[in-house]
Image 1 (cartoon, rainbow, N blue to C red):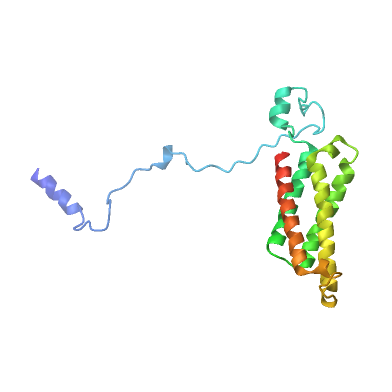
Image 2 (tube, rainbow, N blue to C red):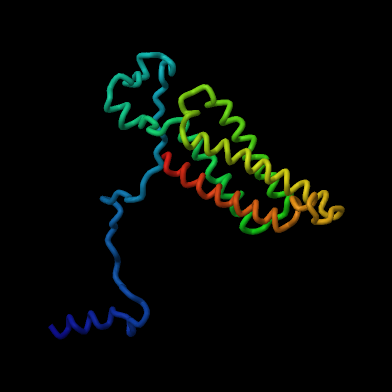
Length: 198
């Protein structure tokens, strides 16, 4: 037994530092399949005729579950959708009054509002919606905003040439500020009416 230990000692290298396993390893790849995914080519099943009725199933429009769940019909009326488009326009005009913006920007926004209101009026004037409070209020606000925009435009033009006597009082900056305050209050009330119409 002593001799066998000496034989093993002679065959081993003197130092194993940094070498790791010194013997021979078995071949592990002979019964091993790679776990890496193989590149697969997509299966393409060519349709006979894409537009044929046999290949495409018809939409079950008569099934209420499909209509109510999948299609989700719009619950708001077109009138309410049209009203909702005015809210950001009016909020922008309100902000312009708050910021005391220049006449040109104010008049451009009011002009856009008036054109939208004219289209809205023409669309609903012969319909029952024309009797709604929101419709009437929007039409009144449109006329008032148009008159204030005109007043500001004329004041910008004629202010340097007029004295603030009886004829020039209408263009006085204090009068215009007062009129803008009225318009601002009217815009607030109209926005509330439009939001309540939803």
